[in-house]
Image (cartoon, rainbow, N blue to C red):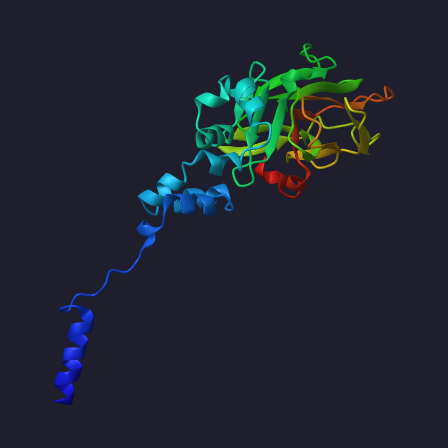
Length: 288
C-alpha cells in the first residue's frame, strides 16, 4: 500500500508522467544578451554568436559594437574606407577596420587590434624623405615578403644618412609609441630558406643613430642608439606622445633618424617602415 501511495503521488505531481520544460539559452531575451556583450571583448562575442540564433542576433546590435570602436571611427570610415559611417553597420565597420587598410596611394596602412580595438598605423619608407633614395649607387628597392608593403629600401653605402617623415592623423585618446623598423644585412632566400648577407654592414658602431619626434601640439622626444644586431628586423623606439581625449581633430607628427657624421661611410641597412602603436603594444612587437 505504501508503494502504491507513493506511485500515485509521483504520477499526480508529474502530470501523467510528463516533466516540465526547463529554460535554456534560447529563452534568454536577445536584448539581455546584447547588454552582456557590451562588457565582452570582440573575440568572445564572435565565439558566443555561434551558440544559437538569439546570440547571433544579439551580436549584430549596433550599440554593442559602437562601444568597441575607437572614438575616431567616423574619421577612419571616411578617410580610409571612403564611405559614409551611416551606410555600414557598426559590426561591419569594426571587421573592416581590423584588416590592414591602405591610404595615401598605398604608402600608409591603418588597422585596429582585434581584441582591444586600438589603432595602429604603419608608414612605408616610400612616404619618407630619404637622402639619396633615387640614386642606385646608394639605395636599392627590394621586393620582400617580410614587409607589409611588400618592398623595402636597402642602403649599400652613403656618407650622409638622413630619413624624415610627417603624418597628419586623427588618433583616439591614449599614449602612443613611434618606432622605425630596421634590419642590418640584406635579406634573401636560398634554396627556400631565409638568409641575410651582412657583407656591406659597416659604420653603425662608430657613432649612434639619432631619432627625433615632435607633434603639432608641442610634444618632443628623442633617442640615440648604435645599430648592432644583424639578420633580424628590429623596432627602434623614437619616443612617445600623448593624445588627450578632449583634443579632437588631426595631430601632425614629424619624425626622423640620422647619422650625419661624414668622417666615415655607413651601409648595409634595410629600412622598411615607421610604426605608430599604443605604447603598451611595445612589449609584443613581434606581431608587427
